[in-house]
Length: 174
Image (cartoon, rainbow, N blue to C red; front, side, top):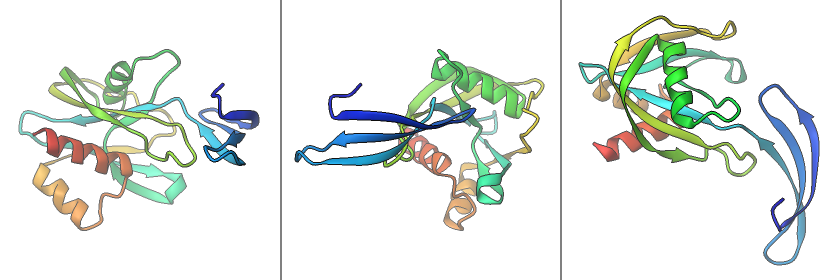
């Protein structure tokens, strides 16, 4: 347990996340409580095909009440390396596997209340296979040029934080 944490109480254990109430000693000596979501982390994939197009998914997300555009991504399984999760999720969600994998970086999407870390990978030299979507996933893969993705972002059509961060990291690596 971290040295600034004095109490760590489980409030809810879900299938994916855990919610804790933590009593924390602040740097100035005061004590406060934080509700913290513990998350296994995940992998985000920027899949680039032979035309240099990038795969975005049109995916139903209950939490936001509809479909959004986002990159393929998914949670890490217990003891799974992030790159292995990326390989698994790319195949499951798009039906593609990749021969070349390059890590673009990692992000912490919501550090105010969640410990989730997302590792971002660029996947190239793709080979088509079969999807293996989860039964509760409603996903449509689409391929767009980087220029078109930038237009979608500027128009407010891409609002998913991990996708915006991944595209920004890719832009800086190119």
